[in-house]
Length: 363
Image (cartoon, rainbow, N blue to C red):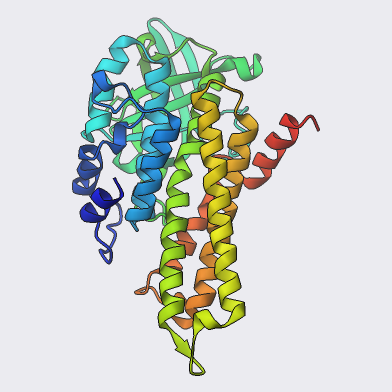
C-alpha cells in the first residue's frame, strides 16, 4: 500500500485547498475510504489493526496530511457509525458511495459551546409525526463544506442526560440544511471545515442511527475507532518526517561537518525515532485490543496521547534541525508542524485523554 500511495501522491506535489474530487476518488480506488467497512458494500472488511496499518501507510506516503485527515474523519466518524448502527436501508443507500468516494461524509458533532463537553448539545431534535425537526448549528464540521452526507447528534430529551442524545444520518441537500463557508485554519488546510446549520429540518424516523437516545453510545463507539485509527495517519507522518530529517542531517554540512556528526542533532533525531516507535506500538496495541473484543479505553487514550503529542514534538524538532529552511513554506517542514498542532485538540484534547486514562486506572 505504501508504494501505491507514493505513486498516487508523489513527493513534492502541492496540496490543493480544499482537496480535489480527483484525489478523493483516488483514495476510493485504493480502498482506503472503506477499509473497515463490509465488502458487500464495497469495503475491504478489515479489522482495526489492518485498517490502522493502511492509514499509517497513507500518512507516510502522502505528504498532504489534510487529505489524510479528511479521509479518516469520513471513514471513522461517519461511515463506521452507519455500518455498525444503521438500518439495512441506510447501509445500502450510503455505504457503497462512501467506499467508492462518490459520497463525502461530514461529522457534525462539535458545537460552539460543546467541544470537549459533548453532553450538552444545543442542536435539538423535536419529535414530530414521522420523525424529528432539527434546529441549531454545528461547528468545525470536518468535510462540511464539501459533504453530501452528515452524521449528526442532537438532544431529543434534555432531561435524560447522556440518554437524551440521538444520532441521525442526513443528506446535505435536505431542506433546512445549510453548510457554511470553509474556515481559514492554521493547518489541515486541505480538509474543508465549517459550520452546518439546521433550520426546521425534518428528518424521517428511518434516518435515526440505532434508536432514539442512543446517540452518546454511538458517538463513543466511533470515537474509539477515530482515536485509534485516525492517528495512524499521524504515525505515518512521523515516520516520513524522521526519514526526511535523517536524510537532511546526513547531507547538510556546517563547520566542515555533517549535521549528523553533532551529538545535539543526532540525539534529537533519536528522540524523534523513540516517539515514533512509542506511538506506533501503542497504536497497534489499542487496535489489537479492539479486534480481540477486549476493553480498549485505556490503550486507545494512551495511543491517541502518544501519537498527537509525539507528532507535534517531532515536527518542532524537525523545524529546529532544518534551521532556516524549516521556516520556509516551500521546504514544507513548517507545514508538518501546522498540521500536527490540531491533533492535540480534536477527538478529545490531551487533557481529556489523560482524564480517560486516569479513570481506567481507577484514579
